[in-house]
Amino acid sequence: MRILFNSRKYDGIAGGVERMSVLLMNEMVRRGHQAALTSLDPPEARTFYPLDPAIDWTRIDIGDPAGRASPREILTRLAAMRGVVRRFQPDVIIGFQHGAFVAMAAAALGMGVPVIAAERNAPQRFVHQKDGHGRTFQFQSFRLARFVTVQFDSYRDGYPDFIRDRIVSIPNPVQRIARPADPAGSETGRKSLLCVARLSRQKNPAVLVKAFGQLAAVFPDWDLTLVGDGEERAEIESLAASIAPTGRIRLAGTETDVGRHYRDAHLFCLPALWEGFPNALAEAMAHGLPAVGFADCAGVNALIQPGRTGLLAAPMGDEAALTQALGALMADPDRRAAMGSAGRDAVAAYAPQAVFDRWEILFAEAARR
Image (tube, rainbow, N blue to C red):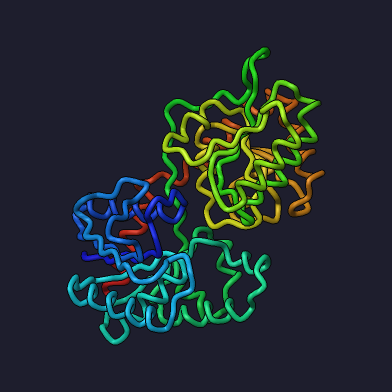
């Protein structure tokens, strides 16, 4: 098959969308398919995650991919995308995230190529966004999609009836880890509470920093490490300095070797407001870490089995509830060890080859219709 991928931007971005799409493209090439990629990046752009050189990447350097495009820029982009479709002659097109899907679906109108919309967030995110008109437009635009992919079956109910027969659930792949963490830890060594997430409103890191501030004196042998970067970094740095001036809260930034942080950690927390498939949480569980998050966070509540692989705090965003859940596990090494082991078993269901098989089947089904 010839598969054309479209996403907004890759240059220097270490996010879940970029990682998942690169993994999928690389795997389809490895399986003998031809893949091409379009994005709004400049010519010198590079992907954070290694991209197979066999993938034909067209960087459509028109306007600022992070800003609002003018009508002229939109039309010029669509013309460039249509040119890529004409040149590459794909059997199927996939757009990662809504904007990329809509752009490519519009560019390919009338060309007879099926387009897949790859949703990367749960529909519950609209609870945290004020643009109801945007939700209506997004749902209606899926009429242009041959299929709409979501990451958990439970997300299906968040979409209107007219979309549901097009929805296919495919989770993200989770690699099994040969050398897991030791969540119980030693009796005398320092312990690490870890969060791997973008420093943004969605990921909600401030509430975790505040919760750790409540626990720091009770657990003087624990530190908090935040791996990731984002628009709220300055705010989090200031908050961390006011809560733990001795350096017990560390902002590690974006790192290529996140695995060492998982291996050195004893407990994981993702305090996000909404997710799609929270890769960092799944990877933490694959490393044998017990996990804590909020019960009303879509994606987080699909992975954490409360009482078995971790704890879910309620209500959403509540500092006291998160403090209580974290404290319960920080105080109990045996429980951390048992939950970490159960977490490794739970994410084994997302073995990469099985997940990529499902994608390959979907591409073939879309191309046949």
